[in-house]
Length: 114
Image 1 (cartoon, one colour):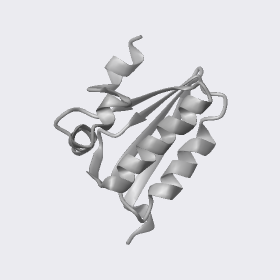
Image 2 (cartoon, rainbow, N blue to C red):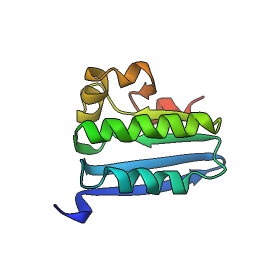
Image 3 (cartoon, helix red, strand yellow):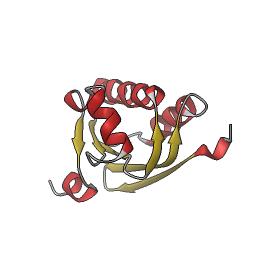
Image 4 (cartoon, helix red, strand yellow):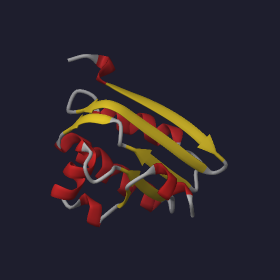
């Protein structure tokens, strides 16, 4: 499997971190992506993970989201996911009921509006 299966882009605006994941999340890269996000969110007040560009996400992606949610919650950091309902990530998060544990927004605009 390719190391470049997924791309992670991190942007900071004030105390909000936006982590955008593109490509695919699976067993070959989920732990590395999780660690890269955790390493990038120091002193953040809010973390938004945009999964809308993902083309594939399996149970390892769900695990990544669950672990991030737990980690950030323990640090008092707000956490939101952007994953439209019709997207791959949106469907997986709904099927696994992660959307009941983590705030999932339809668009990035709805995450940054307030």
